[in-house]
Image 1: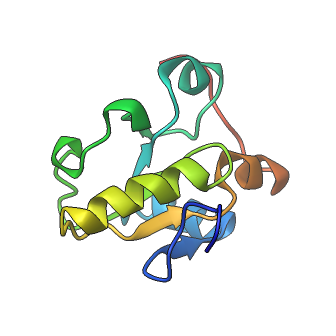
Image 2: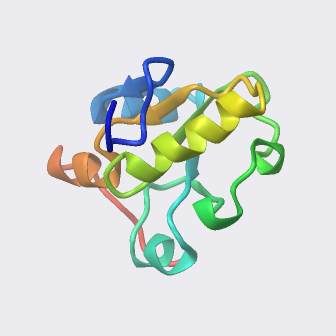
Length: 113
């Protein structure tokens, strides 16, 4: 869609869906925000791979889990998903609304690395 950094091939999760997947170990969460944003507050268990250096090749082995990308509001994770599609990587899922939606749902964040 225009200006949102997402395409029809992007699968969006809602915060409670992601929370459940993280709790049962079925998701690997990749936070594509920059390191200072990540340190200021992130979802527990997230791996930081900033969009500025993001490549599907840099994503750790998901060991059968669904790789979910996340940013502040959904735009940068959508851009990262576009890179995954161009590289024909099997990564097509992100957190709709990003960490902002997560916080608005009343879910916790942690700070630091």
